[in-house]
Length: 67
Image (cartoon, rainbow, N blue to C red):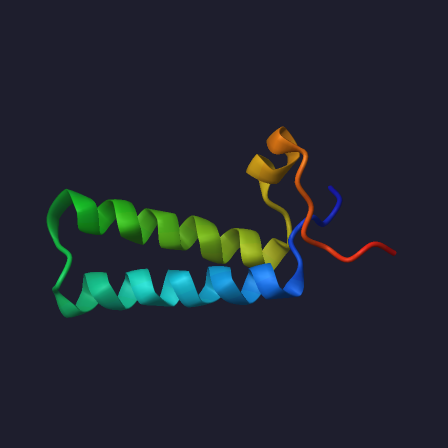
């Protein structure tokens, strides 16, 4: 599994995951939308930690700098 998520992309994903979690746990977003955002935040956090995004491979994208 090649890495295809660059450092700037990782930071944006982590910030979005934290924001979604805060919105869910503090109460402004609740119900089904809250659970969807929480799940999306978990996916964003996981893909940033492993530096691989399966959707990027489907679309041929890569945000890692070339080696």
